[in-house]
Length: 399
Image (cartoon, rainbow, N blue to C red):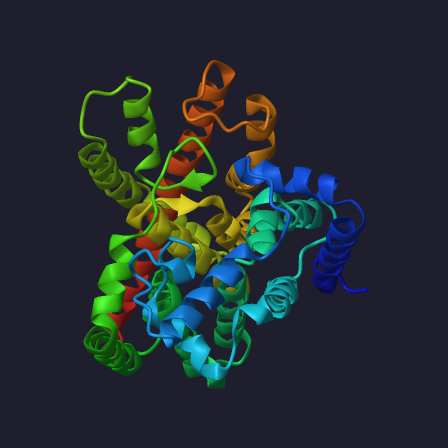
C-alpha cells in the first residue's frame, strides 16, 4: 500500500477497534474518553447529536438560542446555517450515521495531504493523526472533523485541479457559513490574479452581507453565547494564559486587556520574523506550501478570536508536511506535543481535571501555553511573509 494511504488505513483500523471496545468493554472505552477533558462518555458523537437536536427544535419553532426544555435546558451555540439541516429531513436519529460519516471523511482526507516520506515524517504524521486531540474531535462527532475534510479537499483542488479552484473557494465559503473560522482559508486567494482576487472579494462581501441580512440575529446570538471556561483543561486561545495567571493570583491586571496586548506583541514579532519565513516558503513545493499556509491561517484565526476546545487543534495536521520539508523539526515537535498534551495532563491530574492546578500541573500548563504562543508567533510570521509577497506581486504584475 502506498504511503499516502497508510495513515488513513491505520486510522480506520483504530476506529474499528474503538467501536468494538464500545460494544465489548464499555468501562474501558469510558477510560479513554476521560483523557481529553476528564469526563467519561458512554455514548459517542454527542456534538453531532447537539447539532441535530438543535435543528429539530428550531424546526419545531423553538428559539434555540435561549435555554429550553427541548434542548434539556441548554442552548444552540452554532451558526444558524446549521439549523437548516432539519430541512433535509435529518434528525437526532441520524446521529450514529453522521458521526461515523465524519470519521470516515476525516481519515479519507488525510490521504489528500502530500504523501509522507518513509521513516521520520511518516511516524510523526501517524502519531499526530492518532493523537488525543484528533480522538477527542472524532469521539465527540464534532463538526471540525467534517470541516477538516472539506478544507483538505478544497486545498487539494487548488493544488491539483486548478480549473476547479473556484469550487475550492466555494467550499471555504460553506465552511465559513457553518462555523465562521474557515473564512481564514480565503487568505489563499491572494495567490490569484488581481481580477480574480477582486472578484472573490466582491462576492465574499456580498455573501457576508446576505448572511448578515438573512441570519444576522442568529449569528449575533451564537457569537454572544460561545462557551468559555477554565484555561486549565482541554482548550487553547490567547485568553488562556492571562486568565489562568489571574485565577492563580499571579496576575493583577484585566486578563482580556493583557491578552490583546500580547496579541499586539505577536503582530510585532511576526513582522520581525517574516523574512526568514519568506525564504523558507520559496523552497517549498506547492502542495506542502498550501497546506502549511491553510493550517497556520486557521489555527491563528482561532487562537486570536476565542477560547477553543482542544479538538480544533486538528488543523495543525495540515502544517506538518510543510514543516517537515522545511526541516523545522522543533516546530513540528511542538505541534505533536500540543496534539498529545492531554495524556501527560491527565496523568498529572489523575484524570480529575481540577479547577485550579497545583504543583507540577501548574508548570505543565505554563509549558503548554508557552508552546502555543511560540507556535502562533511563527504562524503569524509565516502569514505576514506570504501576504507581503503576494501583495507585492499583485502591485507590480499586470493581470
